[in-house]
Amino acid sequence: MTAAATVAVVLVALLHLYFLVLEMFLWDKPTGRRVFGLTPEFATASKGLAANQGLYNGFLAAGLLWGVSRGANAGGHAIEVFFLGCVVVAGIFGAVTANRRILWVQAFPAAVALALVLLA
Image 1 (spheres, rainbow, N blue to C red):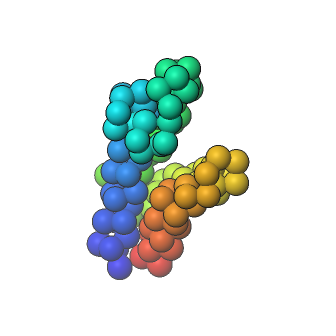
Image 2 (image 1 turned 90 degrees about the horizontal axis):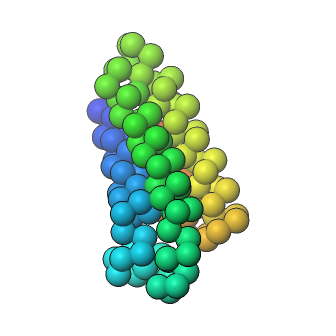
């Protein structure tokens, strides 16, 4: 179960690195506008806010990878549980306040990873 938990945590971290790239670097580009369904005007006006969101996603990814790098016996699972919990809460909040799809794209994968970590 530990290997499955590790793979799941790394996948969630990679997903958040992808969010970082989308929000920090591609927000006002055709790819970012397509992914988020934005008009060019809105993307330009909200670029700074999106970059801030992307930075936070990078912090989540860094925390998850830090936990994985520590290993289960060196406190890594506790770090993973904390950051996965943060991702789940952020995903639920995003689903309620911004877009319901966030529940499935962000919160659900993190909840699965969290369950695997807790069972490991």
